[in-house]
Amino acid sequence: MARRVFITGLGLIAPHGEDPVSIFDRIYQGDSAVRLVRSGTADFGSDLPLATVDFTPKDRIPKTQQLFMARASQMAVVAAEGALQSSGLFREGQSVENGEMGVYMGCGLGGAEILQEGYRTYFVRQSRRGRPSTVPMIMASGPASHISMRFGLHGPTHTYSIACASSTVAIGEAFRAIRDGYLDTALSGGAEAMLNDGSIAAWERLGVLASSHMDGPEASSRPFDLERTGFVLGEGAVLLVLEAESALRERAVDPIAEIIGYGVSSDAFSLTEPHAAGQEAAMRSAITDADIEREEVQYVNAHATGTPSGDPIEIEAIKNVFEDHASNLAVSSTKSVHGHLVGASGALETAITAIALQKGRIPPTANLTHPDPYCDLDCVPGYGREAPELTVAVSNSFAFGGSNATLVLRKV
Image 1 (cartoon, helix red, strand yellow):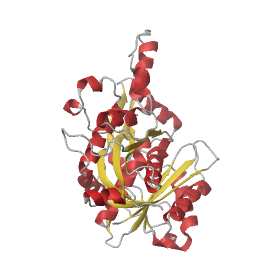
Image 2: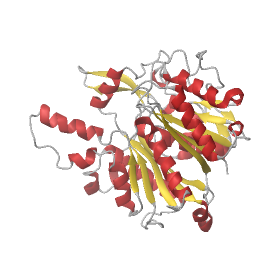
Image 3: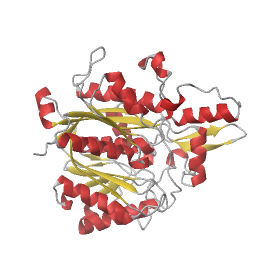
Image 4: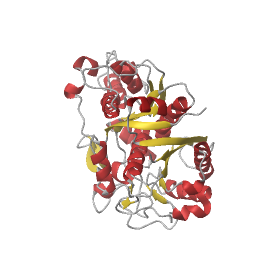
């Protein structure tokens, strides 16, 4: 018999900060965390709108461990501790209550800054004497492994590296494992830190990064807007504690939200161009998995990154899935204020969606001042909206390579 699965803890290292409630409140107000950042040197670089994280491991991670941890892993470990503490499963100085907990993480590039450092040592310094720890530090599986080691978690430790869908797939697979009886509890989410110069230059060359808007860099991420020029690259780590109903009832814990459905698909179309049919398939699969009618969905946290081609495709897919009900949906992209965290993006948006259900408040698409006529659904422009009746919501993640993932969440 399928078991119910609940979100009981959140840990965030995000562009807006670390406290989930204050982060949601800032996002709800349309308060952008995007700033103009210099990438490269004065003579060789660019000033770009980016969503950076004010994070340093300092005394939060022992210095001997920091030596073997890339930035993504450092943020992941701290976010994991926050999630465990908020769920009541861990207190400083004590061990985690459930050592069989699983770790399901999404990460796109791993230790990108370490990889850059290694190539700089080889090509610029013309030396083969790089860090002995380079290989384990650049692996995308680093964040999951360090979480497992740090908290003594002996359950399955898996990493999903599926570009922008990485952490949504990680959460979905953890949800399935718990629902189907393989686990009682899991830490799941994503971590990404690719704001090093080399990675940013590669994204620039791809032509998908937003240019600074005339209203200021904070207005540069503009999903569904006619003036959108691309997405704002961000960084961070977000972890969710997922528990079977029996586990949280035993601890008398109040959950944040329930995950009720998960769907995945592949476009089989293009490495970089989205395809509506594939996105539709993921959403349909998730709604079927949730065993609900599509008319029960009230809010969609859209993947919508702010690219000229991507946003209309997602709107088309939503219309095709929901048909007449699409006009009743609220559809927003919170990337408008926190940027695109790639491998951590889906986890952040799932956390935001969970809090939205808990609070009965729909976050907005900030900077939406000139709506694209091809994006003609209710995209919640500017500021958040009170929605005390909000019960069921969807969170979409659609990745380069055509991998699509959708989660369905319900209020508790």
